[in-house]
Every structure is written in structure tokens, then in C-alpha cells.
Image (tube, rainbow, N blue to C red; front, side):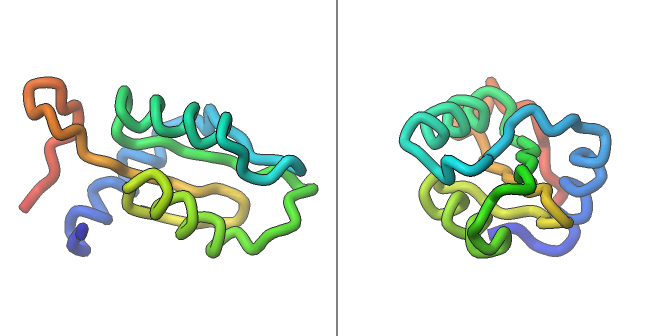
Length: 99
């Protein structure tokens, strides 16, 4: 569980990221989850944009993605979701969270 200082730190990093991943009308498929899982393993922090034709509630979808991917929802703004999952191998960790 992230504390408020860590969330603020991650939001600052997320501001500089481009949304490289998108969810659209096809909702959330196994392929999408696999792609996002690999992205979280590699990058730890990812930004996902939601297309206009998306029918589900974005906050619910963010929570569902977080649960499915064992990740923390850092932020949901408009049609953008930011997820974080710490790399368990500390030597490969890219983001060092403040305490």
C-alpha cells in the first residue's frame, strides 16, 4: 500500500510519461492484461489512455486492472489511468520510492 508521499512522488513521475497503452471498445482482454503485465514488469509505472468508445466506468476499470495485475492505482484523471507495481528484484528496480 502506498502512502500519500509516495503517491505524490509517482504522480510527478507520471506527468512526464506518455500514455503508451490504450483500452478501447474491446474492453479488457487476456491479451491486454498480458501486455500490461509485461509493461509493469519492465517499467514499474505505466500510463493507460481510455478511448472514447469505452463503455465501463473508468474508476472501476482502474481498480479491476490494479487487482488483476497486482498493481497500485496511482491516479485516474479523465480518460487516463496510472498504475504502479514495484519490481520485486531490487537490482532491477527503476523507481525508488520515498519512505
